[in-house]
Length: 115
Length: 115
Image 1 (tube, each protein chain N blue to C red):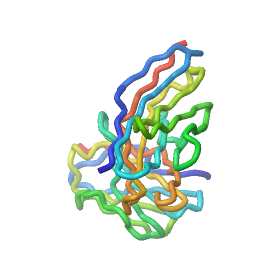
Image 2 (image 1 turned 60 degrees about the horizontal axis):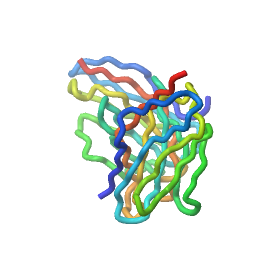
Image 3 (image 1 turned 90 degrees about the horizontal axis):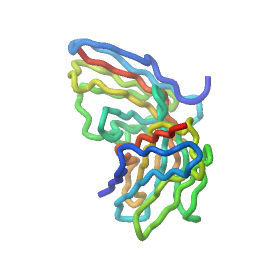
Image 4 (image 1 turned 60 degrees about the vertical axis):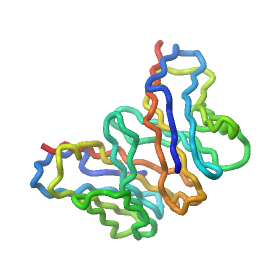
């Protein structure tokens, strides 16, 4: 499988549930990103990892917890979410961080609905 | 502060006609500029970028964009639109003078190409 994959593609969860989103990139990249895409809003960067180290946390609430065990995998652990957290969550990767002007490659996203 | 604006929520164009999707930016230094496209139920796909060099950048699917420093613009263009170009287009900017991996996205412009 090539590119950036995300599972699950759709997720419905209650506010008391705990779930995880998974992202895997098959491109040999060293940087990975989580974005939140909500209707009528710009794409919001949530977290950035470079060589497994977190380099950006864009003031994301603690109910979102990222994990990057290696350069190919990125997780987003979810707990006690709110209905306003319903959105499309996109994972992306790039060869390096953005310092060199690398473009990002995006996965198809996980459509999350919080009831 | 970095920012990017896409002044049009939607652009309508007839197939075969030229298209332009507008983008203006604000950064304190020299910008890195990107265009991405998003088809329904898909992640974002990279189209083209400007880092340095020639102001006219050619990208995927026949798209091009011109970097205009005096007007702080990076409009996306295509000489002859196709129905299959109908999608959501995002402009993004990064100011490399900031030590950050943050890429700022516009709110997106929906392009509708009519047969």
